[in-house]
Length: 153
Image 1: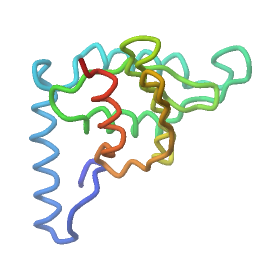
Image 2 (image 1 turned 120 degrees about the vertical axis):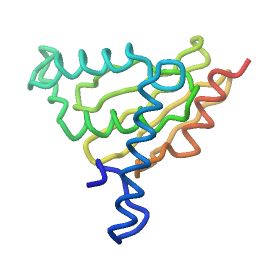
Image 3 (image 1 turned 30 degrees about the horizontal axis):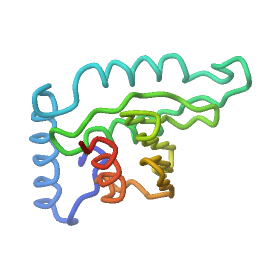
């Protein structure tokens, strides 16, 4: 059992190392000083509860699926220690959105879907950046760099 993370190998030993690594990382993330704050978990749970049924917005919005919730949770868990925490929202297409916002001209939005696609758009002063990455258990460098740039002094 690798808790949804990609095993680095196929042997029994590799799966053991993968699981122990996940468990150790999980313990560190449970510390609000090092990992995801409880407020982000609470916000994700609240959004899920409000948006898991069809038509949650009254305008025919698609429900947020358990796979989308799982991918978003794993994405949050994969953020490096000490990184700024995002706000959480939902979109009418059933994606969950994570947003890092410093000012109207310094913001990043990452939409996560059930397939693990990460669609992102950033406004960094006069510059824009957007694209799609796939989530394989680690936050892609392109997105980590954008988070850093949004929160740069």
